[in-house]
Image 1: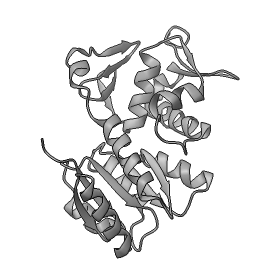
Image 2 (image 1 turned 90 degrees about the vertical axis):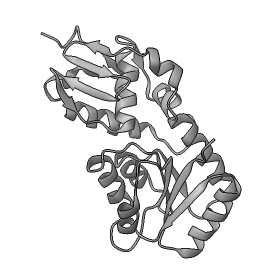
Image 3 (image 1 turned 120 degrees about the vertical axis):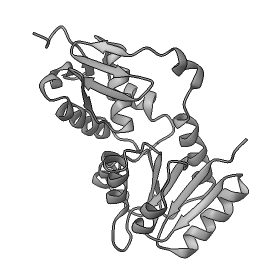
Length: 233
């Protein structure tokens, strides 16, 4: 079995060395980069996960994540490493496409546990996907196999979490999901996720759906619901 490959991006050499040593001992193949620019130049789709520092000289970790998601079109999982743990920083990280958030100083045991959990939940479920049918709702078609969304046959580019949220709600059309339920379904191993994180992702999905943004509705006091009947005319 091939080893999972991890890319560490941090401008502090001692942190890179500590992480590399412990991750390699845990059975992973590890590459390191001292800046976002270096990491982007060496990035390939073969990586299973990126451990990404937020505050670095030059390009920030948030900006690198945006480049990976928007320009390189990759959904490789990203765990942010940072001393910044305010609510706005968390929301920025998740909006940029992050999958998890570990505060500095960190416990190496916590890092190993998070890495394992994020890789596990991002790994394709082959048997399920073999039989997965596209979700067709109103003018939208959600292709579970290719992870693409189409509105009237026009592709809509969503981040990994945006796709997961839309798929969850659309596959249970009419059911209202509370923010806590959405977090429980899609962020099982990420204790830093806030209710507002869900709101940010929903807002971004709605903006990308354009004409069909009202397929996603907010039931005040309850949560979010996907419904075509109420909005499709």
